Image 1: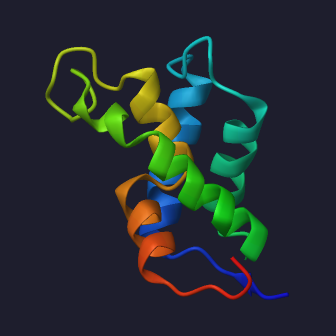
Image 2: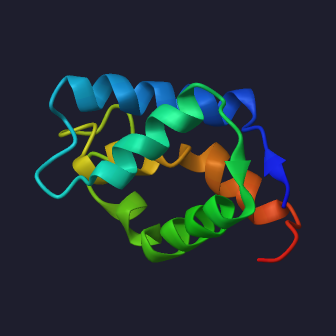
Length: 106
């Protein structure tokens, strides 16, 4: 089994999420898994192939979050809890990273 180091831009999004989480912006539905993933990616800790698969599934399930008011900087309500969670999983950079890579055994 291989492990993958998250790119810097993925870590940057996750660090932003860690700050928002500590500021209480994550919302009631935010999970311990999301918190753990944010801290893991922010520290650029290795991500297993299984975790990459979880990231892919997260982004697939939550595409619609990007359509909500307050998801983008400058919009009222920014950051929405959905945006906090999105960045906790690496944000757009995380989605692109796991989406373009061919990981073994996924």
